[in-house]
Amino acid sequence: MQLEYEEVPGDGNCQYSAISTALKRGNAAQLRQLTAKHIAKNPQRYGGLLQAEDETVEAYAEKTAKDRTWGDHITLEAAAQVMKTNIWVLREEGIQRAARPEDAVSTIIIAYEPYHYDAIHAPRCVTRWLEGTAKTRVGIEELRVVAKRGAKKESTGQTSDQHQRGNSPGPERWGVLDTRTGASRRRDILHEKSGNPTAKVLDCRGERIGSTKRSEHEQEQRTLHLTSVNVASLRNRLDDVMKLDTDVICLQETALTAAGQGETAHAMKGMCGKNRYRPMWGDPQPGRKKEGLTSIDIAQRGGLATFVREPRTVLGSSLDRDDATPEMNRRWQHTRVSVDGKNLWLHIITVYCPAGEAEEKRRQREQLLHHILQKKVRELGNVPIVVAGDLNTDEGRSQELRYALHTGWTDAAAACAMQRGEEPGPTFVRDNCASRIDYILLNPIAAQALKGCETRKDVKGADHMTLTVEMDLGRPVQAEYPKIHDTEGNPGTAAEADGRGRRTGA
Image (tube, rainbow, N blue to C red; front, side, top):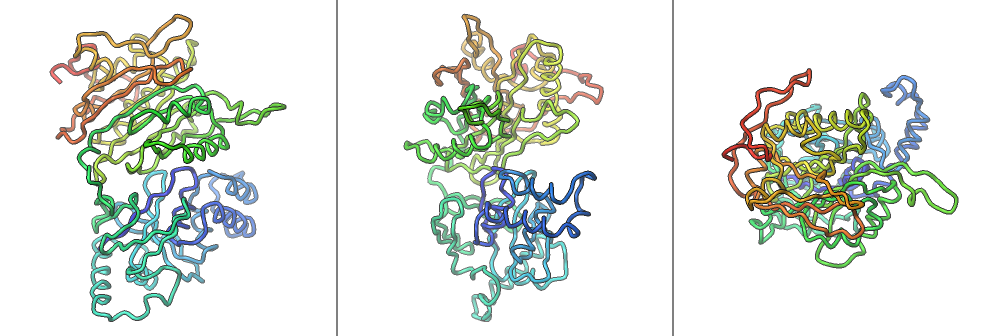
């Protein structure tokens, strides 16, 4: 049995996109507005579900109606009521019923990874069984049995009510409307005859088993080029960025409001050439209105984005949300990119550290670097991780960066320069002053895939150089992790290091 996995954009509207895509009705914007109106009209139903004690249903509904506002358990329940559909959510351990309206006329499955939803297209035999079961949780193994039984009945012609309920067509006719492009696409998830090159398939263990339209150059996809650059306003330098011949682009200081992000994404679609990228946006920057200018033109400094060249698969993008340390918000972005179209994922963290030499700015930088290079690594586990961005500091001034480089992390530029018998060059030049404050750091697993690193001036008008690494992720790797600071921030026992960010003997 196979469930077709279809990604939706990670733009803050993913919950609504996943539901409308799975239903094959409407779009995210329409569903968002319907959901917000439904919540506003039913304060007694949803008032008790609000997490903030001082928040009103009216204020929550108003916030829900705004584009790019993340969905939660309340909006999921409300969307199910509006669309009259049962909603099941697929996780690693199986599927769980999330909403069951009394007047439901259809059943859908959506997938949830941390901070992101995607759509699932399931055979009718599965959704019909889910409609009748009293269970709230179903394991993958049980789902496999249900699908095999349904497929056997369909092959012998024993099912006659495939199209009697809901809006989901039978498995032999998948005329799907792509809510992103409006193009009609044909699919058959049971026989893997898909016209959608970005669709993914899950096997019965819940694992992604590759595109339904396999690339003829699958091995080439294991070789990945990643570029990082501080663009200091993406609107002014989009043309140069789109000309970069690389697989992943990590951008800092995009300086775009929410409207600016939408405008830029639209401009990217209209650009010709071999490089077509899927943008994964960080939080939009606040804008200040000024007479004669729009808020897009004067967005505040900062902002992140990660562009992934098609047809590589992206598994969502998450942002930092930490109310205890608000100064770190909008400062880093975590994106997962498929290397082989199967189950090999590269974790990419784009970061932009606070600038300035004031004591408070230094403290914030150290706190952010500790959070990413130590705590985040522990959360992700034994996976290849790349941290790329403008750190606004260097090894000599940052204790956290120095400790990370001496306990397993690799500074890509320094490691490759050392192999050439050189010193790494500056990455930031302004007023005849040069410094190296931009880095691409690799954890021990990712470092084993490093093939090379270049520093170039590819983006005109930017003060920062572009850093590009080449990685061969087809190489076998062994998990080895740096020590983690204890809760007091004290370093553990440091491994032997040669001072260049490369472990001795690596």
